[in-house]
Length: 329
Image (cartoon, rainbow, N blue to C red; front, side):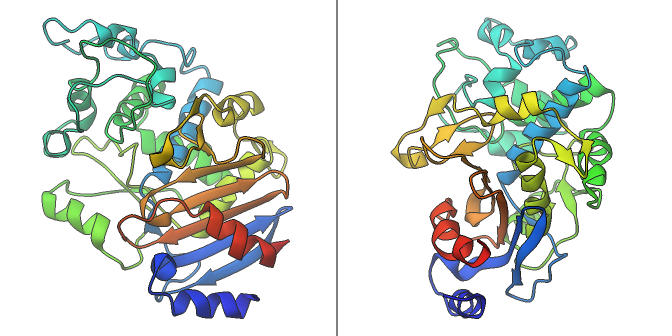
């Protein structure tokens, strides 16, 4: 299959590939693939859902590098001395940044309180109400999109800046990318539109009424921008010779800490990044609807894919390796 055939394949797809908007790939520092569908252009952005988690991990790493955060083993409650802990709650005092990054933080309840958090005035503090619980810290993997919101609050309190401003100044702009702009009136209708609207978006990042961006979802990026971020990771934190993030943090970020179950494709999990294969240097930041930053250190290639909302599409690693990589290598 050549590039024209792949374009036609996606254009005519009624299956998992039908929602793909952009594919962009960088190998050895050069663009090797750039194509778009559904009226999108290379510079257009899309809500890339949980790929946001991979971005927030990088932002947290930069805050750590700068000494704003002392250690990833620092206690979460160190950053919220003004927060009133619920009566009888003790586990919350033992939760660290590492627990948030590896999705091993404990939470109360069986499901995430989306309505409670997303209709509140301060999503970070409301999410803290959900942290902890009677079972203590078990080390069990618990995927929690809302829980990661606490990281945005930690970054803001550690740096003294809004998370979006810190990310723009220390990640996006140094990479030659546009700074993100805050989005959202935080209404139910606006949130629904943000997820479901299939039109191109600006370089936005959804924010709560306090102007704190969402850490687990809601950043809008193009496939090119995601490939650029992937290339930064490929280059051990360097961009055109300039250090953006430390090699040490990236090594820790990509290290497999947990082996996930069948529901998560038996992948390994690092600091909000996945390692799909036990024996290969392949890594990914993965979002719903097939949004992904794919990194292959063996081939020195990064791939970004955006897609409009489509249920039950999660992992595009196989698609990339079977359909995209042969056209780029």
